[in-house]
Length: 94
Image (tube, rainbow, N blue to C red):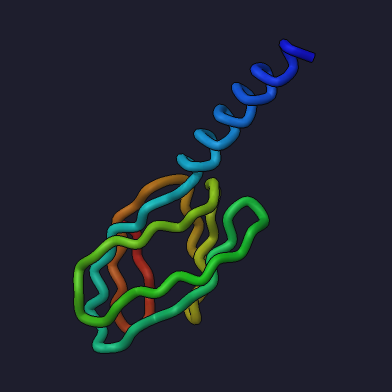
């Protein structure tokens, strides 16, 4: 039993460290004067992602890749961090 507690503690630390790094960052430029909130599905989990109007910024999605961003103009698949451009509601990967 004395050895089980340290082993469990180490396993918990490693699991927490793995989960903490499970995210993806999208650097974006939204050319439209409209905010967009779309659903993203990452490894089976759904997230809501908002892209602010008329600005360059970044958003992080707290799921592991691959991620699919479900927009009004179709789905966009990401396998890691990316730079995107939004114009007229259409997402293009740069």
